[in-house]
Image (cartoon, rainbow, N blue to C red; front, side, top):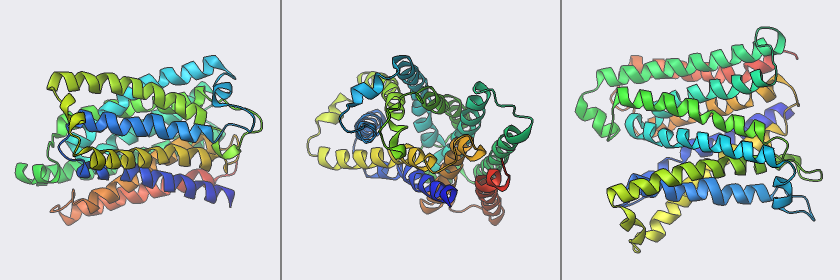
Length: 339
């Protein structure tokens, strides 16, 4: 029962993340870099800070929690800087491929690297016992994402240039695929940052929120990378004036805050959900892959809602559904085996 509760909580957080790109359409007359930096302020600083404060025991402070193991905090921050590169290219993958296909490719790569690398670093034997189950689960997830990616290629093949632009304004398959792959590899550094930040736990704090100080350090590193790039783009494109459009600020700030909150939900939910999983179990080790698989599943549901798949053939839709079914199976696969 605890495992099911944990999965449900992770799924709720994942749905939030997959919905976080929807408010983009409500931001008015701002360049991409202005929106990305502003939503990042909420997603990577404000809400992670509020979340981390929940992990602080009574009579202590967040500074004391982060000072428990300064090297661990700095490592988490460093991985966050690398993850920030993935965050930048992740946003671009949405721009070139759309919500459905962009997230599928990027998150598929992220799920594999973010699950397997931490397991290897812990000395897990991926070819025997629970390690083999973990590796098989990752392979099933990748298979499902590959099927979804194939559905995306079928969509691109059967659409005219006008139809592609109507579904995704800046659609570019080759460029988008390369950007999404880079985004996935670098985004896996978030999982490495969470692993590095595991020592940032103070006795007396809530088990539900104990991973959130590490999450804060990773997102702070990511914000640094994104802020430098976005401010550079503001200068290059002369878009600093976006922030001075006072009549638009209430609307744009509101939807940027909503996007940031929805995005942060995935890691808030992941931290809470993991507290219900058995420590050291395959499901615990597989939790990152579960989150990414759910993100892909929900992002494709949003892709259908946003009519990114409008006009495709029945065969393409069947391939897409088959990929989603494989992904859903991957979520329960590790739990079919005893440790």
